[in-house]
Length: 283
Image (tube, one colour):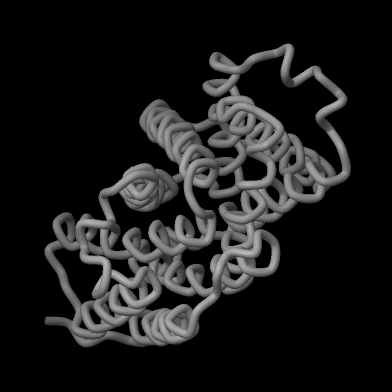
């Protein structure tokens, strides 16, 4: 999970770079098509077969795929218009809180350490975003609104996919999600742009590799696999470690500013992961 979050943190800066090459729908299509093909090839080499899901599970997978498409459109839109590092901070700070809220409403169970951990992680995010100086209204201005949609969408994804994998093979679930998302996004692509081979230079491939194979094939697949096993809250709280990585890589790759509050907020995020994933006392 720690390595998966590292791949996510880097991807925010890489996404801003690949935005220079293709439209948002084309990027979503290329991202999920390449991820599906990569995992399918690995799956085939291991001589595994994809299990066909029951109707209920298939509906769950289809819902997740639509949500993936929505998330990625706003992911590329937000990183294109706004600062990639700040987007990574915004989404990864608010998402665990949203996931925690949804799960608490469903399970009607709250743990002390979960509450403390979520609050500490949220505090770290607020420090990184400098909300105490800019005000909380800044969260809903400009590109931050796109990032807020990403956060809400990902919170719903985390909860829905947890239930979808209870009686179904996780690897098959992941591969089918990627395949259906690629099919959905194919309805909105611009083929002439995709087949313009002059766009595929080394700079695009190296950044797209981290966006697709790194963040998607590895990072998201690990996240999806872990959610039903260690719990949606315990899984989502790992996201609190992403802000520090996102801002750090944005500083290196995009020359976006890196401040002391980013380091402080990042350390608080790591503390939040430890608290939520330690054995909680039930209240």
